[in-house]
Length: 171
Image (cartoon, rainbow, N blue to C red):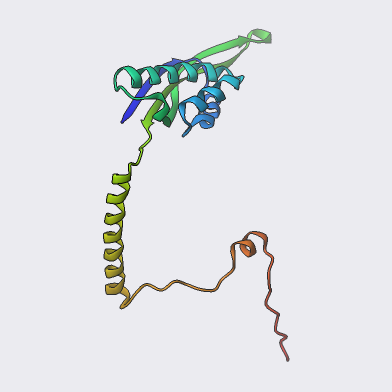
C-alpha cells in the first residue's frame, strides 16, 4: 500500500533540498529519522516534518506498522520564486531570487513472504522457465547456449591478465 504526504511552498531551494532527499531515498523509516537527525541542513527539518506526517497518515489512515514501512519516493519540485533585490551604488539594484520547493514523500510497505507464498511462486517460476525454454527452442532450434570466453570481471576492471602476443609483420 502507498501512503503520501505533501508539503508545499517550503522556503528552501529545491537544489539544496534534493541533496538531503537523496540521502534518505529507499531507507526504512527509523534509519531515515537517524540520518535526518544528524544532518545539519535547513532542508532536513522540513523533510523530517513531512516524513512525520506521512508516517502518521500510514498509521492512522491505513493501519500500517512503522517497522514495515520504507521511503519509496521523495520528490522535490520547484515551488514559488520570490524576486528580491539588493540596493547597490549609484542608484542601481542587484536582483536575486528566493526559491521555494514542493516536497512529496511516498511510503510503501515491505512485502513479507510467507512459506506458502514462496512455495506458490516457485511452482509458477518452474512453469515460466519451461515456457522460456520452449520459446528459445522455437527461435534458436534447440536449447539456448551460454557464451563462453571473453575477459573475466577482474580483467575487465583492472585491465590486467594474459595479453595476446603481438604478431610481427614481415615485409
